[in-house]
Image 1: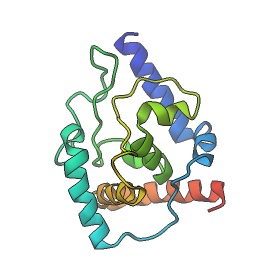
Image 2: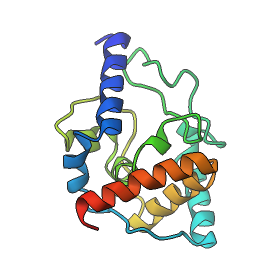
Image 3: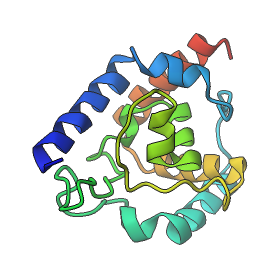
Image 4: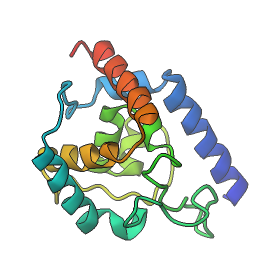
Amino acid sequence: MDASDVMRRYLMLSVIFLGGGGAAAWLMSTAGVQTESTPEAADIAQGEDLYREYCAACHGADLEGQPDWRSAGPDGVLPAPPHDETGHTWHHPDGVLFDYTKLGGKAALALQGVEFESGMPGFGDQLSDAEIWNIIAYIQSTWPERQRAIQAERSADQRQQEGN
């Protein structure tokens, strides 16, 4: 598989996620969906500490991601994307972010029947669900209001589809 094939798959996955078509089935199986709540300052602070410990090595201390994150490496794997407003993290509802973090990219996508080599490991054996939510809350707290509002709406739509 060459870089153009990987990029085509990446773009296809983005369309699936953004379009919501394939995401609905995946989101229905999300066990860790959090109900709407406002994270406490202590949760965000813990999330920042955990982000620095578990995520910053790949996604950057300032959430900037790896250079050329849109282009697959020689192994066909895309580098870690930024989690700031320049990346696509805010395009995805909370449940998707939770599953991707807990299960890892490959396993989370496999739930949809999508075979895709991802460099994102799962952290479900190292982090509790609450810790994963706190990392997500920290990342979200760094986004400008526009990105937070769009992402919150997508998360609300996800919860409504699931009846939560």
